[in-house]
Image (cartoon, rainbow, N blue to C red; front, side, top):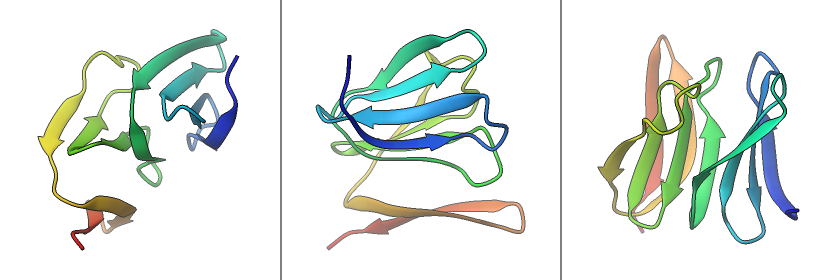
Length: 100
């Protein structure tokens, strides 16, 4: 059991992304009723608008799941600062970071 701090459905409403109070990021598949822990120490997470791609920050890393049906396949980039927003316009996705 987890106390939910944040949650968001994907655009197709088939998967639920949520973060618990301990800052663990989880994926809940509504069709199979299964939960997968994606990340610890998660400070930011969001579905990329109009897609099934997940972007999340954990400490100094930006984590991206391009295929959320394979949660073990994550792309990790080093990051300075804090993610504050994901924007998608004209087929281009940008991660907005506060380097303050």
